[in-house]
Length: 332
Image (cartoon, rainbow, N blue to C red; front, side, top):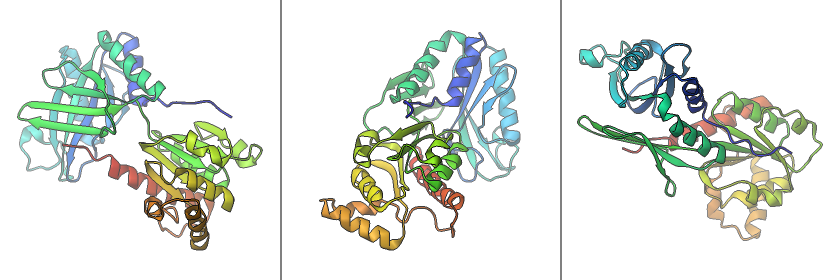
């Protein structure tokens, strides 16, 4: 029904827009966190010399202080990325104190990006538009660059040795949730996931005329196809999440058969224990190794007593967030 809509990371898009106007920015990225901190690895903030910022590195007085540092770097025409540690404790060394008392520490790289570097931002955005992964490398003493992504590259990697540091971040792919089934729960889940702002949502149904599919204005893409073709549509990858919430036993069983052996970050199936047991039996009869069921969240969602479609959607969304956070632990 709708063609590919490959979402671009909003922070990189905002940075590119400022650079296109001839003004520089500082891209602040949290690269390491220990203990209780408001910012976690991958948090980003685009800081122009003046005007509105985009994104966050955690907020609070720490963020306000680093905004001043970033804008001073632009005033002084600094070009090299800078690593700054902030400790959220009043007993920390004065130079590291963030002004907060969360008791943790976080490190962030402040990367000044000037208009003559716009080609690098164009390249980053092009990777997102093509859903083609690459590695953004920021390192002390080096020019920021993109490198080829090999295999299942970790989302983040950070190393530090004294004053030397290196940050690798996988760019070009956005976490994508395939919502299989556009009934009431599917519609509510698409609505809930879009509030996160950084996940691409694709809805799939085998029924073209169902009202809840027509009314679904929250999905980035809509597809109408037989469940037997699902395995072609949904790619493997640790940025892929799949949720089976169709309205029928047969379509649930076919969807599970198509996806159960596909390496993805998450796969969940909605249904009662009796229904799930029967689906397992049917799919096993088609030659699927029962051991593969261990990777499937079924019944789907966190157990919060959810009953309505909106409540079930929240329980599923929370489970996806939890799985996502486990995956996004940095290396190093």
